[in-house]
Image (cartoon, rainbow, N blue to C red; front, side, top):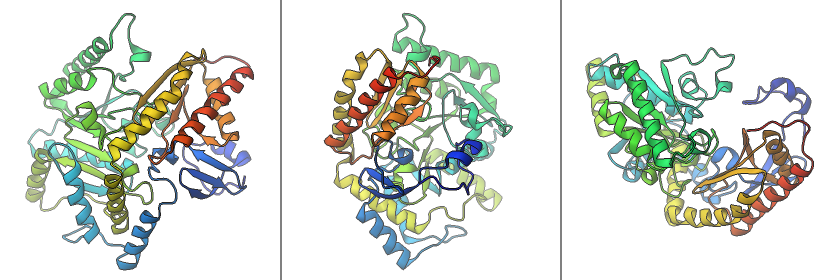
Length: 441
């Protein structure tokens, strides 16, 4: 149904929305959603990377309803909490890698990133080094749409018109071997060059002014960019030399998306702070979490004690309903043997996508677990393919010249085959009916 516009839609042209309006979804079942006109779509991008257990999981619904009836809300301010909030914090501490033994809850990924950035300031103040305020972020990164999180994001459309970046952000190159490698440069050599560029940036700016580096283990909304060989090893060595904290943004990749519980484990990251959201509740309730290492937590705790309190929090952070849903989602993940299932589905998806690599319209096909990107040579063909796929009942996502695929983790063999078959047919039709004028990636 194309209805009258009543809201200001995020990441949408408001003027165009007056004419076209949204496609309004009415119901969901498994990996599919149905709109108010009765059209059913296989959602190959899990909403916004997040509907990991599909759209009708009875156990998650029951967990929410049960908690609603028992205790529909309580906060975690001033020495109070709720039972599922405490239980989820303990459960997450048992799952998180390394010494990430403490969690802080919010409602969205943007809040988690904003909290991480605030804690960087708090930590270095507590350590007696108040000049270490700036944060290094990368081109093509997406970290949210708050003031701090959007400033860290490396996409101009999150800045334009908002006078952002509004905080002290330093920018370094993206880890995209396909787009940015020099002729004849190996992946490892490219990673080493990116590390040298980072070190030069730090030395020019002054390490004593830089508090942290933030990065997605696999860049998601910037084009589905897995790290090249040796990238995180080289980057972390530079950060360690200059005593700079590492923030791993696992808002998309956390809870199985790449084939490990956390992508930091898969790619060898040892973060001081880790942001999570999306698949934490399977998207059934807005909840985010920031994991904090022992050394960062202990310094913050000491500083807060000296100040009399830790003056940061959100009214709905650690909401008991969201925490109850998250506990049930984690239980389901454990029962399904999450990493094994995702890697099995990933191999199926990779095999299905293999023939596209020889398609002359395709520049690259890349995967990280159940995150995939099919990049075309022409953005207009990409947009046309996206529209063709929707008419055939499959929802994809366009990121520049790339079509992103990130289906629910419960996706079946038949649904993977359907996604790729529709993508292939849509690309063929878009190529035949190529839009006038060429716009290359």
